[in-house]
Length: 179
Image 1 (cartoon, rainbow, N blue to C red):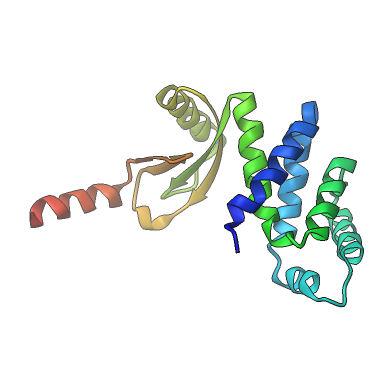
Image 2 (image 1 turned 135 degrees about the vertical axis):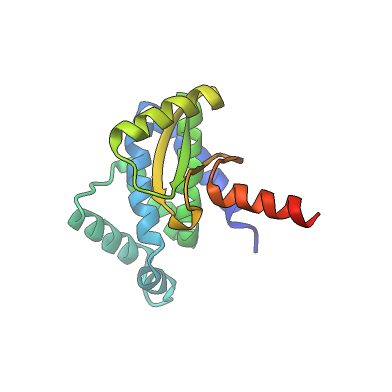
């Protein structure tokens, strides 16, 4: 079977072309669909040969409505096409690729900031401003607390990693001392 990223690319690109100005709103809807597609029970239900694609789509729409997410016609059409083609498992990757396309168009990149301690809004704003100067683009940051870093932060933007954590420095010292 082909890689999930390869299967997802045409769907993400087609939705991106069709989305136009709706890209940001669709990004949120696709994130909700991706979370739903990551649920093991729903995937098992979707893989059941006795269950039709329409039944899976109806259940997905019902679950999302219960979460306060209303799918636009484009997102609902994507869901139906993905189900009809047996690609439900690819929805998280479709959402990730679509998000990357929308972000690239808007000149924004996603940044994962891993910190040893929780950050308040002011600290995060200061870190993001510094990172935007460092990476040369606007960043949309999400924060994860990772106590194992001991101190400092580790930032991932695309395939670039900036690690200023105490753990990384200790590892560098360990390598230098054992070399």
